[in-house]
Length: 220
Ligand SMILES: [Zn+2]
Image (cartoon, rainbow, N blue to C red):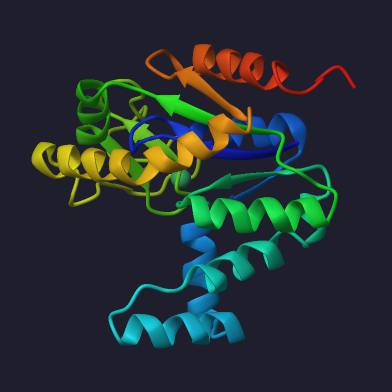
């Protein structure tokens, strides 16, 4: 199963990615993390990317695409993968499609998690993350048992500084402008399924499975 996740901040993509990954033994590839790690480790691609960033320029698609494709060759993607944060543009999507087609491993589904702006603001403004294991919490929907402490590992919960309403609304606007062409690209290829993500985690998880089963046979 090879999946791309789309959805604005606050749509619960990360949570659903973890559930899917566990259920189907998929590797989660969060491209932001991948990118930072390549740069931090000073890999050849990381160094190339660094040179653009040092000049205040965008890192070209070719470099980002190469990083992702290298990652997709790792053995933990054998049963499939979930891409989160990539592709971001139709150009990147075409590069990914071509590379995967060349390996005989085309994408299975592109899942778009949708929520209203109001809900996104509500969720993000009350969002906390464990500083140690990165588990998400939410003071409205998913409180930790002890305030400020992770239920699982006991780490400190922290909040993103840019999670105030005006900033969130701007981020949502930018997100929509950027992803619309991408959604269109995948929709035209019959791969896009939209999931109403304004519900409890378990319900959204059920909807996710349903959307995937619309595209691939899950019984095998
Ligand atoms: Zn934790």
